[in-house]
Image 1 (cartoon, rainbow, N blue to C red):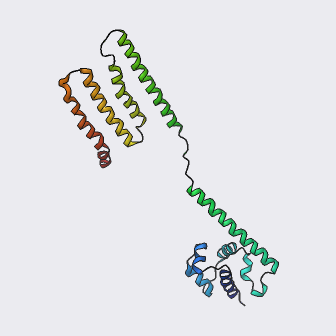
Image 2 (cartoon, rainbow, N blue to C red):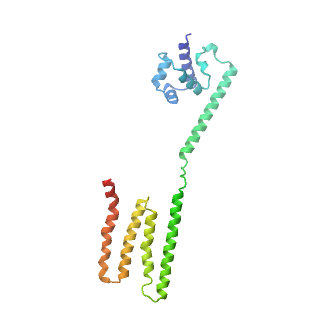
Image 3 (tube, rainbow, N blue to C red):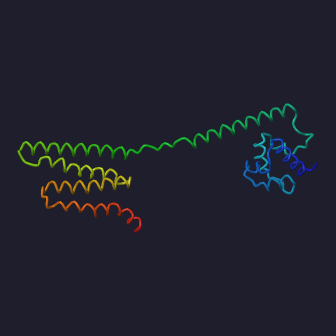
Length: 224
């Protein structure tokens, strides 16, 4: 029997022994089913690399493709071959389970030290701001000045300014929320500070400012 015929016969035999169709085999070795069909018809003989890949898949030495049926392995060798095939299948299943567990496992993002520093700076700024507001309140109150409680009113928009600096780089929605809160609280604080009821229309200034805050990101995207 010629080598080409021997290889062809062994390709057919091994595929059938492993209960694989030509399409299933082609998917396992990343070839087309037409290429597998051409091998088994003898039209084309696989190269050495392809035979080595097939030998690994079947758990046999590459020389087995060049042996005639009467020269095939002995019973002991066949048992060893079957053991190798089972071990190969177990290894494939373990690898599939590992890859599936890795794919489903949530990815852990590395901790950002800069973010921790910004958070610490935010907490420090807010503590300092409200300590300053409380100190000014006691100073003004003990001095007998009226309107000492305005320090707390102005501390509210100042708080939103600190939050705006913290959320400046990311969190576009949160940034817009704090911008809106800053505008409205600053207008209310100004109105209360003046204590002039005639300045009530000043609060309507918040409407166009609110519209600018909401529309500015869309205008920015359009210009870019």
